[in-house]
Image 1 (cartoon, rainbow, N blue to C red):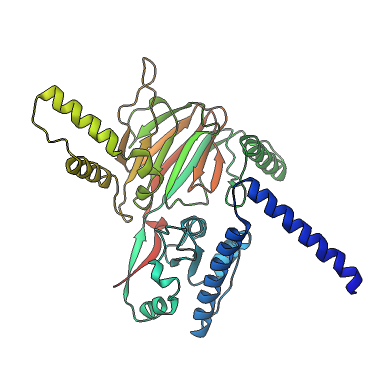
Image 2 (cartoon, rainbow, N blue to C red; image 1 turned 90 degrees about the vertical axis):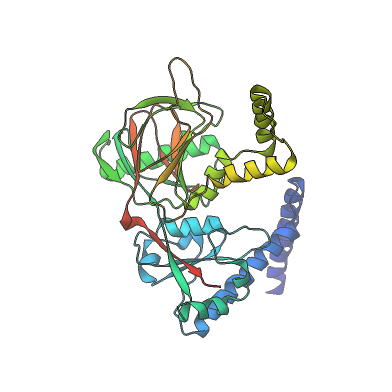
Amino acid sequence: MMQRTRPIEDDMVKETDRDKTKLAMKGSSYSGLLERHNIHTNNVEHIVKSLRKEGIDVRVVKRGEYDEEVVRWADAIISAGGDGTMLLVASKVLSKDKPVVGVNTDPERSEGHLCLPVRYTRAFPEALQKLFRGEFRWLWRQRIRLHLEGTGINPTPVDLHEQQLSLEQHSQAHRITTMDSQWRKGTVQESFSKPSLLPVRSLNEIFIGESLSSRASYYEISVDDGPWEKQKSSGLSICTGTGSKAWSYNINKLTEQAVEEVLKIGKSLTGLEIPVNRDLIEKVTDVYNESLVFSPDDRRLLYSVREPIVNRVFSSSRQRGFASRVCVRSRCWDACMVVDGGTSFEFNDGAIATISMSEDDQLRTVLLKN
């Protein structure tokens, strides 16, 4: 047996060495990745042991094993990872009565805005005791729901969580899911005459745009049942209060350099004695950027048009604004509608998305009291 297993061990060593070489060529460190893996694994084990010590029945599942059956089984769900893991977990929890708690299992390298404060990562029993004693309050995070209708619609998503896809692979994945859907039904589904509610909810944002980022996205938009407006831009983002700290914030924020230049122009045009110093620049920048953030339980959407093209044909009456309902009709060639950066739906010419909120879609999360 030893003679048979030894070559296998040698092959494993050679494969590991090859992996180390490939990572080094990419500027990554095998030992660093292994360290991060061990930190995450140890913190997950700490959470599981803490729960079982309190007599709580626990099922540990990986990303690929997380499905609707797991959600139905659980009374509450703990997301062990970072914000990305929390978004994936939340996307499959459709009941507002099922609590979701995020624990940041790699706090040294992950921000974890959606998770418990990082001190509870290694002191999870303390967080549990606070929950048992009721020393917390519910935070009902509003989420976005999506209705699809129009021509060429396929509600089957492509899951981006487990794969990094090239543009060609992404387009091919959508074509494959479309063909699979048609084969299963035995018919070619040309359109949905009535809006179809997609079985996914967005905690952060919806992004609509061409898959090739250098190509302008062409679409029509209606805000709160207003008139349709033709637009070309780098894409459209629609976020919740939770998502207002994420991608939407970085789309809309101002830099100190931009604020300084605007203040200097204002000073020269008005002749006013504006003290364009470092303190004023920082204060104006901070006040403006803080105005972009709103509460997770706010029932409004914030839409943002990225880099709008304005000319004789295309307009953009407002680059950003709050709304209760946004409708988008695609005029794109190879576009997608991406939910929380992880679930992608084909969204090409003739597809219509209605983006809104409902009280039934709130996500129940917790804020521990200090």
